[in-house]
Image (cartoon, rainbow, N blue to C red; front, side, top):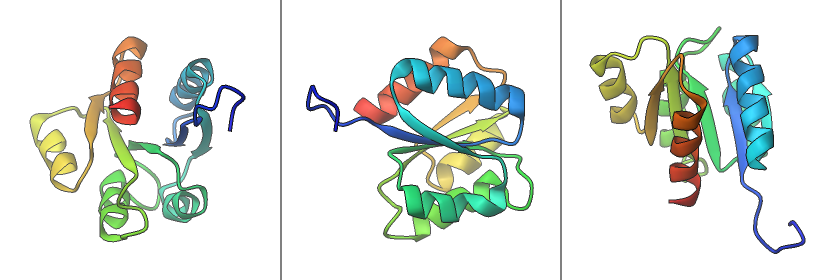
Length: 128
């Protein structure tokens, strides 16, 4: 725990595109969050179980397992049910958003996103 007694929030980024992951890494570092990244959907649930982050930034389109499947898996696991999920997709249609929220996502953001918009959503989920 940091010296000021405030718990440092942890974030797991599940994103296969390096350029987006780099931008997210920069933002998470700047905001002072502990964070890690998984680039493959198939590895995500195992990493989420071991890390138990406060928030998962979850891309919809991933190799091996979709963000929707990961979201559903998290919501069906009582040990992971408390973790916030912010889904990200390049296909930001109302149908995509509705599906993500129906599966239990706490928020949904369309790519490309503005960093200010993403920062606001992350803060809302972690501090709200």
